[in-house]
Image 1 (spheres, rainbow, N blue to C red):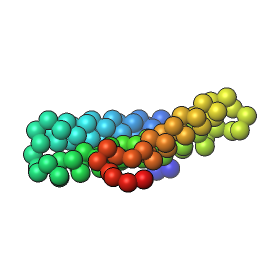
Image 2: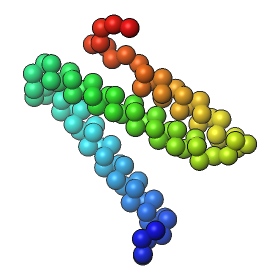
Image 3: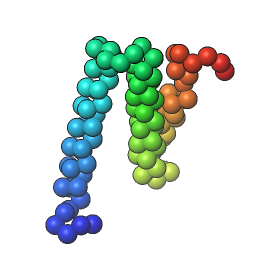
Image 4: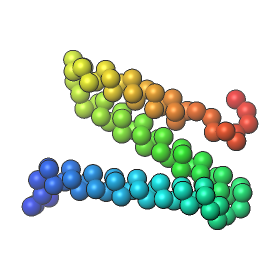
Length: 100
């Protein structure tokens, strides 16, 4: 731990960073979706990349929360199912992809 920081301050700063990042990603996605500043291919590619990034980050963080609980804790079971569902979202095929 850095000098002068306690765990509560570090948690608050991390939460503020996460909120700023989420608002920024929503703003970027909205601009790409509504204004369509690039070619059709590039707009679709960027929108798909942002969707995949959101699903991967969600699944990773849900798995990290799941791993913080002991095997006997009740929330671990709930977070396990939630993380599994988010990993299924990661493996979902994007709409424009052809094949298996």
